[in-house]
Length: 345
Image 1 (cartoon, rainbow, N blue to C red):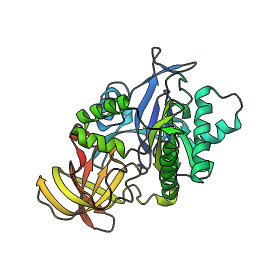
Image 2: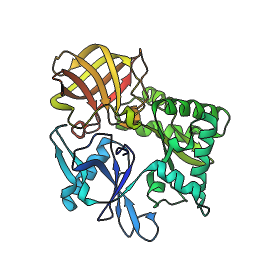
Image 3: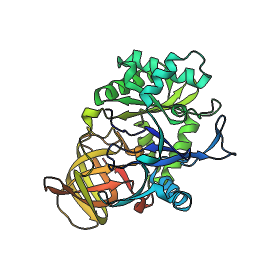
Image 4: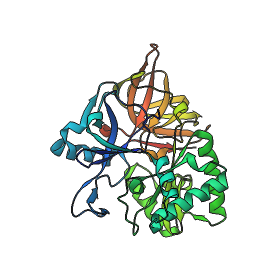
């Protein structure tokens, strides 16, 4: 049976749409953030209108969604004793339907009466598959198209690709398709707007933000429609089970370190194994082994051998076998969007 995965969607009995986060979930519920809710003035949907509740894919926006849930649907807020956080989570008994991106691709390919955006999404999947050699069934369509509330006039195309090797092949395909002008990067004005926006969100200067955009291989435009593609773990690549590690918060830290491995930086949460750590602020602990980020913007950013600076929540990690080490967590609600990963050389 296929596991619940990042970027899958859930519709609740109240017609709320949640997007699943990560791969490890409590036994009786699924960790996810509220994305759309019914609203007659919403811009999404057909027979029923929906309002988008998450304006940006960042921890600050997710936290703002928590405030709404606390007021209207408090049963969807959950204290997770394993991760020592309060997060939004959908109880299994409240799920009306699950949506899986790879099933949406099959569904749209089998249909004949697609709207222009659906047709373009299928065309993009086929284009990527042909260029990369990755089978079509290893791709998915997520976002508003997945849950059939998209608006062809302004909705983006959000794709998924399953598996490390397939993700790497797709990355090379996208870079080649951009060279061939089949896909397009941001124009100068759009790039400037993107850089300016990120400067204010992640403590980035213009040089850091520009470098970040330059390394964002997974976004661009296809036939004038903006697209993104997100690597997702195969079942065999899900290394952690819920409860196999516990996390104990120990304040905030600012460190410098060298990237030892970036192999798991393509997924969300992304992970960098680090070495040669220098603690600039925070508790002077030993064995900080990794930086984990729930801020997707830092996925596939730093590379092996690069020197980075990171601010985030310091956590002691306790494995089921009794091993103890520390990590820096970027993307916690407590950080209030003041955490980051910067490349310094």
